[in-house]
Image (cartoon, rainbow, N blue to C red; front, top):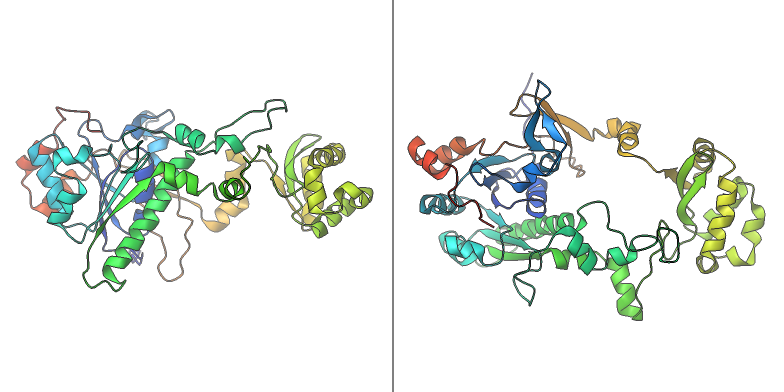
Length: 420
């Protein structure tokens, strides 16, 4: 069997990754999928805190739980891991030497914390002026909140996500609700990946007279607020706070979850033509002629009455029956899936969304492939998330020509486990 030729677009780019938990690793995973060599630096003996956020944990071939949480596995494919003690001068020097032969340095330490190790941007850029140095923090490198810690829940609350998520206060179960993913981390990571790619382009192709790197300042707060998009613009234009609409949309109606006789479906009629077709196929032509529902604007005003009228009809049949009718009419509708339902969809297999890679513990780990489909430079190489320090000897000996004794010294159990 022939080896796969790696045609991924970032092949040849080396990224030194000192980030932990989610936002930074999410960013470097994207870049690793694109073919960059990711060298993940972890604390000896402790590793990335995300490894311990479980259960569930990956099982070994004997069915015993390993130390690799599903949380960690979700953000660390296509990487190498080295264990280096940053509290040791030898460890700091190893990182500086790696930075000298890397294209990108990414970290999400507290503001100013890496300066005490001589690993901040001013120090690293003197060693390698071409390096793209990316810092991800909760609130950024400037401003009154720059030293504050922040997790996703806090950022969702502070940036207004929870104010527009959930049912209205007057409804049963109403009140602000957190989105069920670590949205602020994911957004910061995606913005970081985009900024890093842009900085590499500017350095190598963008026409600068001097091929210099730069410092990228990514804030979870900034990223989440930017992604509020139309909701933020709603406020900036009108001065009014957007409301919560539960499963509905603020400017389109109907767009909601509807109860059928055996559960819920989601259905959206995005314009007047689709609404008239909907009324026709569900046997409710009178609704299309109701003055309250003749245009999207009036349907938005009379949203609650319309939802109740439609739900009275949807309750008369099963989910499967209604979905078949709506799909036949080419209307937008679908089931509200559990994860098991989502992964049972034939679209998963058709698109090759799940692959497997051999983990160091001896078992195959399932991985979700990158959603970026590229015809000339396919993203078709996937390696399992590494164990803590799995590639320490390989990387430090090949890139820095370090002897085994020196590698053992810098990668031993840290005397100072707190390196945040």
